Image (cartoon, rainbow, N blue to C red; front, top):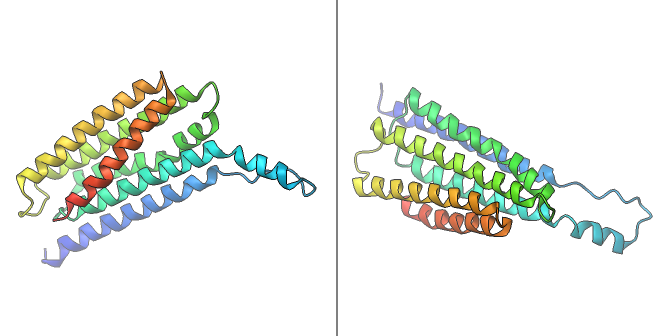
Length: 206
């Protein structure tokens, strides 16, 4: 294998992953539907119909931010990866599976937010990120277990990422449970965690 081959392989995997992230984040906008009021509807009626789209806006911006932060984190982590192998490819694919699933719980949340079923919808939404957390941990476990990182990646950095994933998993589980009591609390906990991930992404530079 030539020295350029490992870089070429990691670049292919990252390019494929970027495409999946891009598709998933684009699909979120399909939740919006233009109000069909007829051309004789007044401006007040249209404005009222647009205001009723607030659950879709909340779900859209939340999931857009979540996928964006996951992509930034994935990009930062990939800068530590020197080599890829078959188990890594499957772990990466499993993570991308959950990324592509995000638009569905987003649509469920948009449909039921502000209605009696909002707590179950919020719990379902938060639980999606519990599964997402598991896939990121599997990705990181595969990467570290199979020694695919660059030699200069410090053990302390590896350990710090492990700690952040475990804490994130616990927070997502708590958010899921709390959503059955209050959708706002559960979703708010998720948002707080995304802010944490956004800050952490700046610390993955190597």
